[in-house]
Image (tube, rainbow, N blue to C red; front, side):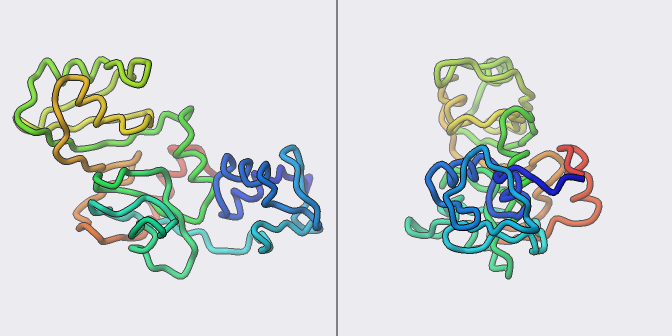
Length: 236
């Protein structure tokens, strides 16, 4: 088997970042191979090449870990604490973890944190159509016609959203499943049918459920739950 691997793939599998983010770092001149600036098309042999990012050696020697956090309102889905408290601050583990995707500051619920760049790449790339389920509460009741419109697709950000499953929970709340991830999509969809979101909470990503996890709490993803997730997204 050839020892050569694309640089961005190696950085992803080493848990540094996703492949897409690795390409950005390479283009911006932050990655070096054997002391020279890396190329976006470069392949490396990890056994003999010295790869550095931000002046630190990239090594695939860490333990991969996976956590679910119930993000409270007001916390940032980021690793950068300059603008306020982040989800990383709420998962004080020994490994350096980062969030997969984002929930806006006012949205609560399930977010996955990991040091596995492969999982990040699979779950944020739009071509994989992974399911994310949310519970939405609106100001005042929302009518059946509005729910039907959202399920069939509404026009936001210059194109229609995909057809999806929308289920009424009460007069002013419903659940919705997304297989795309456009900017503030659910809030924009609700606005498109003449309503406004009061509360928004993510409760599921693929087979990973929030369960009874309280706000600010986190737990490990492991065992059968993790194996099933890998099977669903094609990681072996």
